[in-house]
Image (cartoon, rainbow, N blue to C red):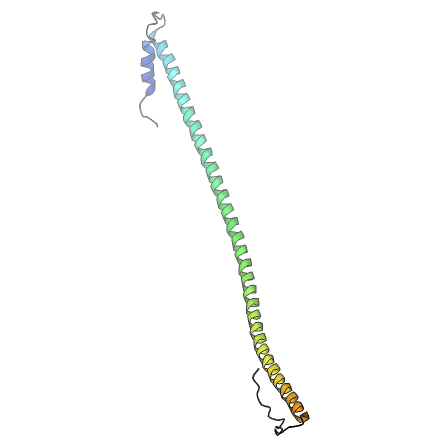
Length: 160
């Protein structure tokens, strides 16, 4: 805080009174006391000014360090954002790859199920034909065959 008062006069009046209980009378004129009071007050003012200057320099240095920390923190955050963007792109790419292959596996699985069903039906049909032929051969070798032989073109459906 700066003040508009002339503090040197205040200190000079205090100094001119002198220390309490000193008991010694000064042989020097009053002006010498006031000059030494001015010197002391100037010294005190210079000490106060020096403290203010040091505090101001300390505050400036603290503010500079704070700005540097803030700048470093922002740089770290920018680096983190860039790393997370790269990771996000990689994960998105992997997800697309997996979704594509999942779709292919499902399509292949559906195709294989259809093929399985068709092959199972063919196997069943062949088993019925084979069974019918075996019955036919068995019935033709049977000595008391009263049943007329059916045409080979239309085998009867057998339920197994």
